[in-house]
Length: 490
Image 1 (cartoon, rainbow, N blue to C red):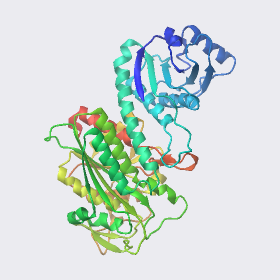
Image 2 (image 1 turned 135 degrees about the horizontal axis):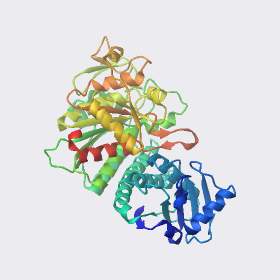
Image 3 (image 1 turned 60 degrees about the vertical axis):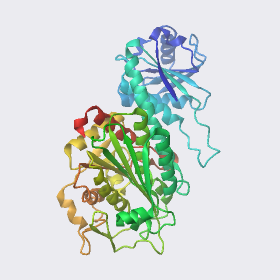
Image 4 (image 1 turned 30 degrees about the vertical axis):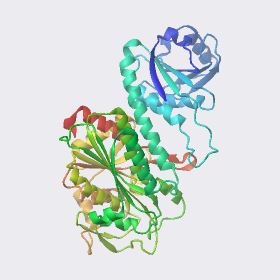
């Protein structure tokens, strides 16, 4: 998608040649309009066809005095990036079914365009255009727009282009993550996930290494191997590297849970909604999406991605409740519930991360239903014993409109993970399930700064709008860009 800026005053917006003109207004800023547009808006409000209520749109075809064939009015609650994105989404929704290829976007805001608003525009355009077609050729064709032009004052050009560039890269990463997560389990196996990582590395000049079962056995990743044991699909351990800074610069490591399908294993899940367990590799998808965004934006930092990928299936060889396995760290784990498998593959990956002497490690996982109960589907769960790292991630999430919320890690929660037969149990009781899961992971992160993002409630949507969201690619990308700009943060 081509995003660009065009210098144009409000007086000339009506004369811009485009397939569609979108004009964003609030009740306070309508006075900025001039000429034909001012007249059209005044008449629409007077006749009750348009109100200054957030998200309200009005479509006009071949409006008098407007060069663009289509004119869409959209009301924003205010001038914040969040309100702007909601308004842009509504406007693109009004255009989605037509043949619009070039959309010009103007905003009658008092403060003019800000980079964050331009980024929100790119995100809204990409989200509205996305249609899953990989296994559904009969799906509606994607929206036709391929070119988005922001109309603004000349002094706003640099900031707007900056926001558009960042937004376009992050949106490409989000779309990539959504596409991978949306594919059914038989179309996105661990092998396919590794192939996608290789293709990404080849396209953007990244380094990639894919370890098979034999290599994982040699390393001693007993917890990861235990989960993969019940599946006919071979496991893959994917290692990606982006080197944007000198080798002396410690990397940030992203660890993504890559369970490409989760039946729960011997502790099998209920049949209802089990199809949604194809989304259990949402953490892995977000790591790959973030790498795509970072590879396009090229910040000066070093980044490592670790993705343990396998299926969790019931089989004669599958791990059983009560089995004890030895992790890469040497700690033994009593597996009380085979459906708590994500933390088992992650713990070995977190130990593997030590070899990179990282500045920080962030794991991303659709880990617990308990996090959905605690936070719903709006905010991801954030766990970290490091106040500075947690604050940085939360601030990046707010900036990216991809919010998270910090959860506790008090030592008292450790009591639930005690075992009579191993160093640690893989689950506690029902109480504070998302916290005890994070406490389990914490046992494997003592040698570096660490944070855990539980995205079980934010990685996908259920119901009629079922599908992956691509989160938390925006949060992670903003964190990495901010870290590159202020290296001391990492």
